[in-house]
Image: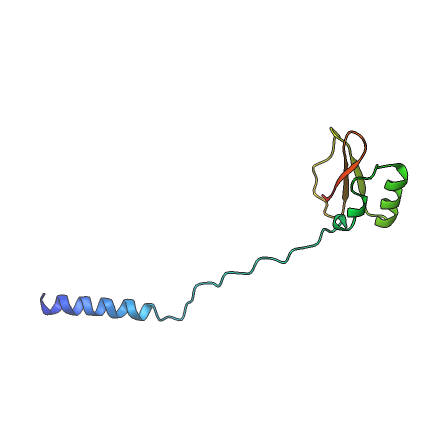
Length: 104
């Protein structure tokens, strides 16, 4: 290698080494967002699972919810697909038994 070639290689290596020391660090990965509790309280109604969705039971759940929306979804029910985390959905089976609560 000739002197100018050695000089070019050396200066290129020096530039790369200095460029690596700019202080720029890769972004730290962010932690996962905190788990939010269901906004509608679905996680608090486990004692109603397996019970019949009678008018009295639905009224008691609605009274507990206050003015927040509640809807009962039977098999084949038509429902809107808008997302409302404050709305409680009460899913029932063909016999009218509560099978699931969810917020949507």
